[in-house]
Length: 533
Image 1 (cartoon, helix red, strand yellow):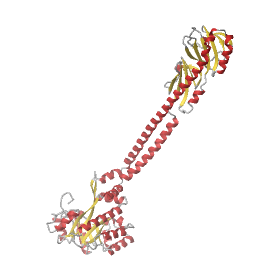
Image 2 (cartoon, one colour):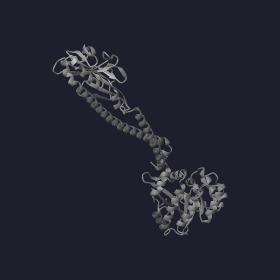
Image 3 (cartoon, rainbow, N blue to C red):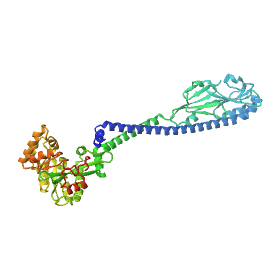
Image 4 (cartoon, rainbow, N blue to C red):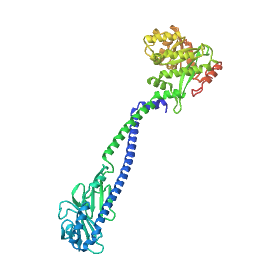
């Protein structure tokens, strides 16, 4: 696909750039939140695992200390309450969270640290306690003395006597567990479960274990005891999720905007043109202009060409139009000047002194503040006195005003000839001929191609040639391809011609060969079909 079309596709369809930029922003947004959420979830999962280990260790220590306090009382189940009451009361007073210690014989509690002698079946206090187990823990809604406050019941059996042991009621204090989870904002609650009962931080009453929510964050079992602690909440804090999403959105927007700017800079034609200049992708080809009477070379027209490394040859009208649209015609013309100056030093040994050298100039450059400076630098770089420069200005874009008058006068002072290019294709031809003094009038190839055909261009061409003869202007017919066209133009007073009949545009080596073989038949030199001579 030609680069001009490539440019047009991107520049004329900004939606594509917007789509690509938005896609890039979206991809970065998704990548950022995916990576951030994954890393954050792993971090919180590790934190939850540590919390579970700390909680398990804490509970194990609590029950180990409790067992150390209660086990020495197993022998007291074999004596009367009065003998051990004082020791029982003392141990209950100095042990944390103990509500009451009961001594049990034959499933009957006969001594209490709180009330002294008593006689009450342990199943009246905790119906589901399994006294056949060496250890058992149950949750109850309350005790005989504190009926509205849930308690934890711990049963430690006496290994030497069946149905005897220590029956202890414990206050349930979740504060230590809440402190352990205080740094975990995502932990919303916890539950203690024993047997078929459970107590939660969001409900003051004992509930069925089956009523607990499914999928707790972590489950903590106490080794050696039928007690389980459940932690509930989110995998990570909602606030952190919102922060990640907001950060991802901000990064996505920044990336999208950056991609938009980069794509606009990268895909705009001006960028490619500047890169082309920097990379040396431009070169100049020269098309000979012959004397109509003798057929001998009279001069050359310098034509800039662009060979893109991936798109190949770019049509001049495409990249020149883009250069003008991107305000890059001035640096492009400066580059043209430098290329011509470089070639001129090679051509001076072959092309005769006085050879006319035509250069197409954009009116945008003619009106630019650096125009005179650029021209002076070019003239200084050229072989002195060898070539006669001709600036070709398109009639359709002719300047007007005092600036135009001053520049035309200045060019004449520099011994620069002026040609009006593509004459007859604009709308104010006669006005320009009256206003400015030209040396050459170039006839557009469209008129030349109409020779021999009955078209509306034929009478226009006759009028143009008659006008040029009356004004005593040299004429250059462009696009001459057949001998019939050449003969027709010669018979009507055209002074110079250029076209494929004489030569295609040539690079320097083949242009040198053309001049060296100028005596050969017309069309023999530089006439290959590919246009590269």
